[in-house]
Length: 71
Image (cartoon, rainbow, N blue to C red; front, side, top):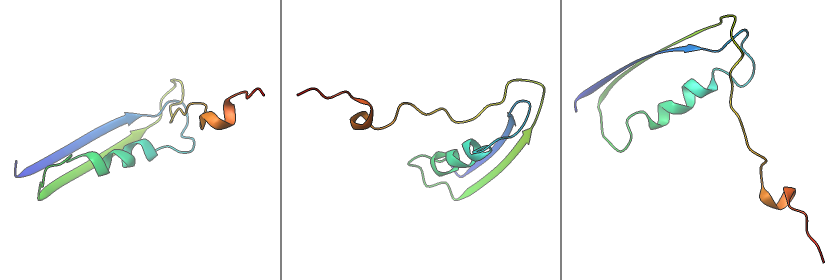
């Protein structure tokens, strides 16, 4: 593969909230995978609509901080 062109349109919902549009930019590091693609073009477009806002969803975090230890 000699080149890759990526054009993404993202609907972030009713309003943009932190950490958006980070979900778009975080995938740039993995876009080519293990391939050495010399020519990469990336275009991101973000727009708001009347839908539910989107964003990153994290779990409970470190299990050590959420577990109940008993003696």
